Length: 511
Image (cartoon, rainbow, N blue to C red; front, side, top):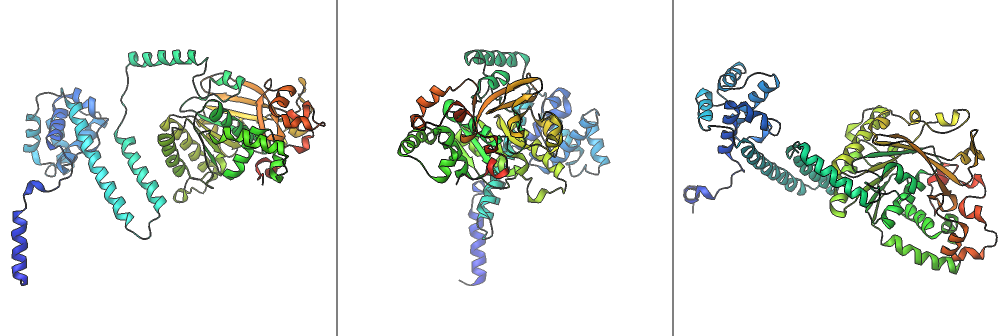
């Protein structure tokens, strides 16, 4: 077969292919016409859908131009009808691009009312979403064949694009007072059944009493100077939530490795000092205790990610996956100042970057409807201040935006760290082996100072009244062999100098 015969054959084959078997992008032109026509004849219909449609959802270019003008007139508070739309299109030099006056007249003649405009608009929007999914999928396929593509970057990009569709085009409408009141009453009933807890219990009685649990969509900041035990408190709380409440928790550690964190959890759970675990010097009784107690942690729904210099974009993507796949009910971040905003978004100003990070964390909490708890550093102003070293909101490091974005701001204060034997001049009570959680800001509740017991050897926080010496010996029988132990040894460090007085002691490796 020569070239001329081949061309003739191809043309013949092309002519024989039925047109209906071809693939067309998803579209609903009749619905687009009905929506635009209804918007030009009835202001009530316009008000119903103007906030759920965008120019890009329309498939036909003429319809995009017409909606652009309708949207412009609406924003300028101008009347919208056949004549004003036509006039504005002429001013913009787009009347022919929109199909001309005859086409505008046809649109208004195709509808008699705006009775079903919202239903028609949803169909138009759904067709657009289908087109976007095809576009994104095609892009993913194309990039998947490229040798230079980083698979994890592509995965994050694909996930972000898909989420962007849902976030920007599946908008939630307003709700009536009647439906909201019904929801509120049901929530009040559930809180009553949960004995006053409407959120995730921190596992500390007094803290839960003040907060009613960590609330969904809240951003909670826990700040302190190095050595106060931020990571220890976070781990104690994480243990309470995953073990006692069986609520899945995602923990993002930007400073310590996942093995170091789980080893500290083992120390707190077993009662074996972190120093012994670090050196591996355990007696047979301690090994038995280790294997017995560690089973509780093995079954706990705790997910630890120790990616260093994690960006807010990556955090959002990881959290979305964990919430949807693992049912994560609380997110912990250690700590905020070690996060980044991404390589392509550097501002050159660290304060601005921290502001972006704190706003992003609040956005993640609201978007995923889970509480987000982020640890934060305090400035050195606490150290230079005379008298009491109790931290203040103004001590939050690098950005006042943290205070603004957070629903709850709390501090950890241990006067023993500064060599004090009592809490302050007005409170002569001994502070040895104790810590104070200062709730300095609470957007939806009251403020309070809650005192907890701090067991430095195990890097563990517990309620003040939780353990007595007899309870502890009963739970950890191997401790009875050590005749040198007394109540203070078990419930606090013997020497304030043995507490976390440096960055390495505070968050350093156990091995």
